[in-house]
Image (tube, rainbow, N blue to C red; front, top):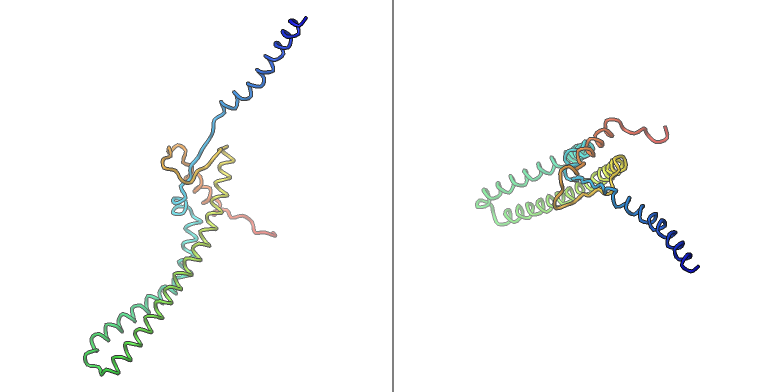
Length: 183
């Protein structure tokens, strides 16, 4: 009787074990899809990035021209001082030197402020482009059933590069902007 119970229990365990192993084998045969996006190319080639760059250039063009003009004027004044210095009295030379130093200090301060403002705005614009690009990468990944998307790699096989798809999708999103909220 004990033999019969063991045989019956063994017969029940074999199909149960086979059922437990079958899903694990099916999962092992499932492929892992990986993709790669080159963020530098996206920032160079995607229309939203180009639009952001054009916006920054337009926004800062006047200040940049003003700074260039101020720098040129300071350089011309410095060169004039160098030519005229030998003929000036000591007090005139000292006064003009102080004036040039003050103008240079003002110019350096304005240039530093310009660079800080430009960098802050550039970071804001790039952040918006990155967020938009990340949404598009996620949409492409979900639509094409990728398991992982990498942005940095030492080597990537070109067949896994989805950068062109992302750029195309970003450009398409610019061509057909989303409707405004509340409409």
